[in-house]
Length: 134
Picture 1 (tube, helix red, strand yellow):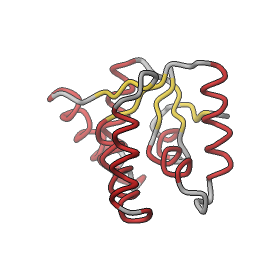
Picture 2: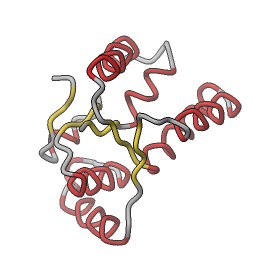
Picture 3: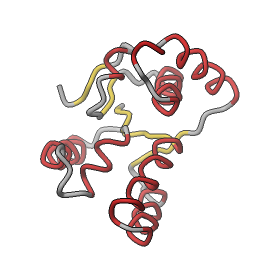
Picture 4: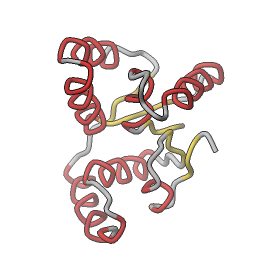
């Protein structure tokens, strides 16, 4: 099971993104290997906000509809327990400059027992997760 962070989504849709080629290859590999993928509503919040700013609201909305309608991607949402854990992680990892969205991702990954993250964000490895692809 692979947790998908904001970066690979964004880089997939924006050709001028510095990680575009790596993201496209990663998405092809996920599809080829038929790996179980999950993300969070917090990641989608970040993604759609950034897409609206960089590619326009119409593109962001259409992308959001496609992602929400996906049959391959599971979108997980934090409960009170995960949000509380994320607040603690925000404090614990303060020296890393980690975002609250990342902390929510870490809590959700722990809950789902996901060890790998498709991300370009070093904060995931600092929090003890394996970056995918390696």
